[in-house]
Image (tube, rainbow, N blue to C red):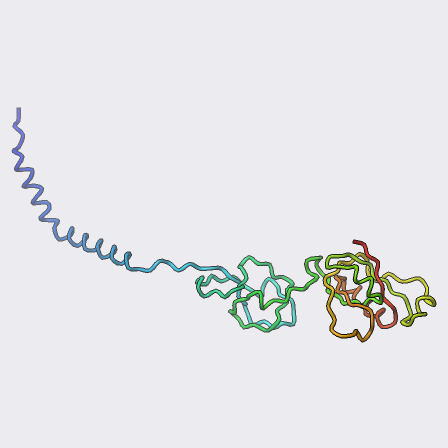
Length: 216
């Protein structure tokens, strides 16, 4: 039976191994310490917020399209108040002033068409109704039909034939407050209508008395 080598021989072998590897181990430990120091003093990543910016110089003449704006991640602390999120749908909206390429788009830069929530292609149309009392019964959100009858004086409706329906089942967007006495009489309402109805209303306003029927 072979005797086991004395324990001190194992210790001497370990010491010799460590001695030969001393410099590489020291370099490795120094590198690890340096990396730890760099990580300790390096600032944390700055939080960013994705916003919409102009992808080119834009004027305020045409509605925005999908190619006019692009998403850009900016440091959160420099994002202006009201900046539009990158996923905001701006198609069809109008700018209220020209913007330069790269400018952050905020809600203050946009003119949201008031008729847009009621459907694509609708426009806001001011209508002067001959009877102010009828307008007093309205509130924003009411739905009305607009009728036109020839004649502007008190005897006009009696001489006129049946009224013509100019706009059908249209929502009331607003009831503008007019300062002083209205020059044309009646009361003003703002409704959502199609461009064709808007043209017809403008034509009838010049030669007819406009009235409304209230749907709800």
